[in-house]
Image (cartoon, rainbow, N blue to C red):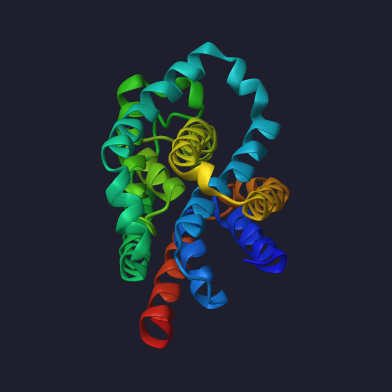
Length: 257
């Protein structure tokens, strides 16, 4: 992996991490287009590069992490993914991250689910919506965490899964998107830290340099991606993202894979 490829993947990660379109899925497909094989380093890169995007959340929402009530809610929501991620680590890295077919079908089915859920959400009487992350009950935090754990399947999308869980829980788009941003921090710190602990010692100095460049690029790009999504949801629904997922999956299924 050279520096240009690293920058491209950093841009892809920064754009897609917080949109409900699956950053891991896009990185796997980008690797396919760039002709990069799914080596152990490539798999770790796809996980660890998300750290840059996560730092952008800390930079923009650092005050939220000083609020004990929000931290409690994040802990409850983080638990399902933490437990399942630890138990299923070998399956995720050894099998799921190797399968482009799984990514594409997850993108396709996730896109359909996102569209149907948005149509259902629009048809509901929008009364008593939870409009702040601080007001989300702990039971609903845990439910959102269960949805997030579905994103261990590459192509599902961590943000997409949490957003769907939030909409089903009668939480406003803005509130669930912000909660999804915040929840990404402990989730990805744990995932990246655990993976680096398992395999980081085997990396060469050049691979470490490549990883740092990717993290830096994704951090800068993610700052703009977060601001874009916050503005976008104030005017539009998530249906466009669902349509994009379906089109992307069909194109790869027919012409590339």
